[in-house]
Image (cartoon, rainbow, N blue to C red; front, side, top):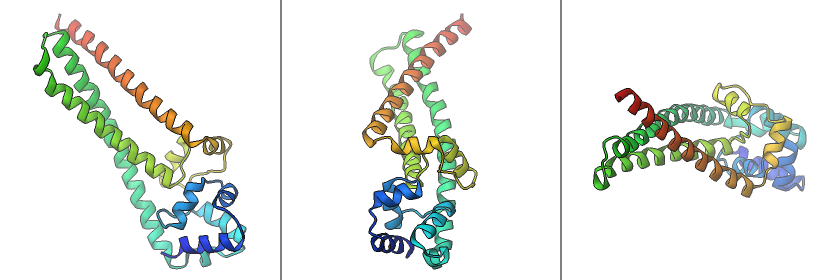
Length: 209
């Protein structure tokens, strides 16, 4: 792959930092770093902006890398679709396992080691869900997908529009704030799962009389 090296050389020739270039292409600094290290590749919109900024043709930027770029993007689209399906299935199974664990305690009065296998299953399913979520977040970060609309466009194989007000606000959020938000989402998901389990057990008790 040569495109990463060409972006790095042209950026240096124009005396621009990664932050400077990121601001002009409407992506994050991490995305510029990923491009320069050939971890991910610019989309069409970004290539056009890079061509304008550097005064170089798109052909001179990508040369023989087009096929590899398309393969990488298509691969990640397939992966994020599969991760989406897996996360839905895992979330449903995790809630079902949690309901079953609470039912064992509340309805049948199981204690101690009797409930451990179900609790372990719930934890394993939850851990798998978190793994898939982290993997999807990494793909979103690699392709600089900051909003739901951008993710949906990427999912459907459409070029995401990153030059939006909401997208700029999302990219301006500091890394530590993103981390706090992620932890908050995990806690919220756990709370929702617990409530679903409790109400699910109450519904099951009602059905069983």
